[in-house]
Length: 279
Ligand code: PXL
Image 1: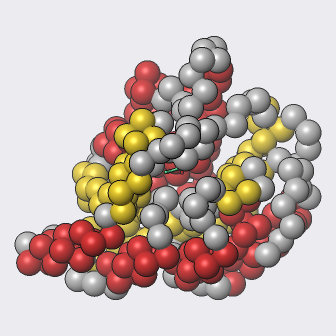
Image 2: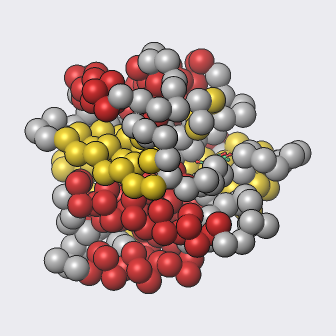
């Protein structure tokens, strides 16, 4: 069984079931060594709570990198999610071109910056511009459809024509990306799915749309996808496993409407592991 060392770079939202509190358990469940670089510490995520605290950890990035270099630490994969600032994106670019990277390390970028047609609170056009630099240098990118629109300048609509989705994916691939995985793709009312294009073939997997909009579902998908790829699944199979896992945890969470701020994924990790074990 492959056992890879992955570095995931995203914030710690202490409460809220997103970013590192999701990525760390899911990647560990995938059977891979999971190292973390927290970009910021927030009391909660920014999607619905009010008055959250935010501590930027940018200053620690360089010190941490220098220490790792001295210890000859390197990573098979880098996976970035929500980052705290424009400056931090530059630092991530710097990390990825440093000795922490091996010749065949992969860079997976979830350009976590918006959802449902809107930028997340605290981000602006300069952030989107800088994110393009990180995205267009990545091996695999995992945007939702809102982020695809921000990256390509396309007008956001809730329902899209699959040919438009394909065109957007091709545009992102033309900038140098190997595989684009687009989440939250709805081509007809009541349906939702994931679209994958690796420049050789593409695939769209639609399913019933669940009436649940909350922070962190993208992080659950991306973490489950990255874990599956590191376990040796091809990108299409990995997307299928991650999409089914995300669908099931959202469905399970819907049974408890009071749990509005995140998704109850923990009781279902065993199902994710069982899927990864199938050959
Ligand atoms: O990727 C979701 C996410 C991560 N981190 C923070 C967020 C959100 C979404 O709202 O606010 C801090």
